[in-house]
Image (cartoon, rainbow, N blue to C red; front, side, top):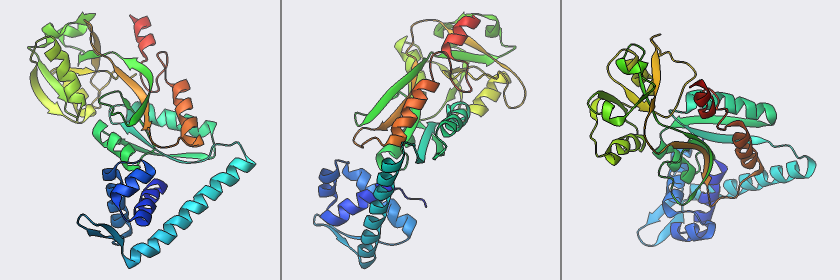
Amino acid sequence: MRFTLRQLEYFIAAGETGSISQASERINISSPSISTAISQLEQELEVQLFVRHHAQGLSLTPAGRVMLMEAKRLIEQAEAMYSAATATSEEVRGQLNIGCLTTLAPMILPELALSFMSAFPKASIRPFADHQETLLSGLHKATIDVAITYDLQIPQGIDFLPLVDLPVHAVVGETHPLARQSAVTLQELVELPLILLDMPISAEYFMALFLKEGLQPTIGFRFSQPDVIRTMVANGYGYTLANVTSRSEQALDGRRVTRVRLAGDHRPMTIGVATLKQLRKSRLLSAFSAHARAFISDSYIPGMVAPAMGHKRR
């Protein structure tokens, strides 16, 4: 099944009100999110649910009327299941759709998901990895329930629970002249080729570090794949900037990179748990947020060198 109960709820609201705008007011969800959910349902079910009338709302198609009854039945059954579970047990159960930022997912997501399912055996996790814009869109469209991401351009409609701050640092190949330094400044880096992580919002963050100092970096290459950047750096094509600190210093080809502290006062990135503010938090979602808060901190991050450990190392 590739649709969610939330998408069904959006469809029901539109079907019963006959209007996207009225459905938006009824369930306090933006009109574009409702429209997108309905379009995704139509695509998944391969059926037209509504006839759209310009400036006159919506009319259910014959198939839409049947689907509306079935959708309401599914929602009622789901609510009955949760009610029964609440009445008979305090266990956390159900499937949680978790999105994670591409740069964080390889390190954080596997261990965090496994530890949560070990703590709550009746819970299951369906993981997704993507860039920031897609994760925020997924929360609004109800295709994901929660996102592990950075505090970059978080809109007002999203709740963000901060977990740990990650300072920015430079990454160079182990034979690079800067690899022997304990710290480096942006002024020292500005003339060197930067291999930029070219992902939405992330690229803006790294460029802003230079602009704040009145500098313009020399961009040698742009890639949206972190592993490609790491391998290019390890092979001496340039340096990169990063907040993530992998426990492994090896690139995929076996060559090594070195992390160098970036001197100066620079905005860190904060890892946190993002959820849609308007939706009531389920027991499952609340349990996951609490688990993430207990599991990720300044002294421990799955798959990464935590900031406190990095300080001790130096």
